Length: 270
Image 1 (cartoon, rainbow, N blue to C red):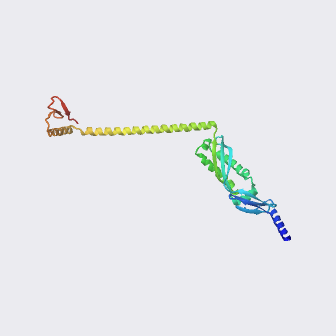
Image 2: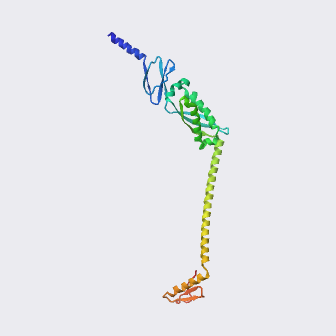
Image 3: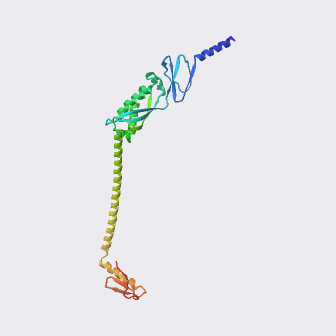
């Protein structure tokens, strides 16, 4: 009986001096004993520790989305309102150093200040209109690369910086829209002019072809050819079994129907 009571007391004491926690996938746990962080983080699984002397601080290592709204300075000195997402993750083996040097609030202590400084430096090189056009991707990459160079040694990996929305000043937005409309009108007019030029070129080529054909025909119709054609016409008429009256001046024959005197049936011409 005494042994049983002693065993129960040992189990109760062990329960009071022992606790456990579960480290999930996508995070690591860093043990902190008497205020000192361990060098090696815990990976996912069940972890046992003494609750009187130790705690386990959990740090996410999966991709996190940090959203920021701020004014971006432009090259011409305008302030452009923008909503930006910062996608980042932490290196698991750097989690203890991150907690020692920066603490748990690393977003506000490090990431946000570095981002604000970097974004002001990068966007100040571009005009406001560039942030609203295809240059946006170039600006995003430049911000990401500059932030990565400052944060990677601390174990913070910047995956992407995404400018989700841009609110240009009303006057600038209207000016950009008017410029784009003018460019579209110019493109349409250029297309119309090209189409008209192509049609004129087609008509010119067609006219030149007709003119060349007429020149060839006129050059080939000399008096000898016309006389030869008249002889051929006489020969063809002579082969006909019908009675015909042929009147000619020696050049052009004329066919008349003898049943209807004075009625001209056909004239052979070139």
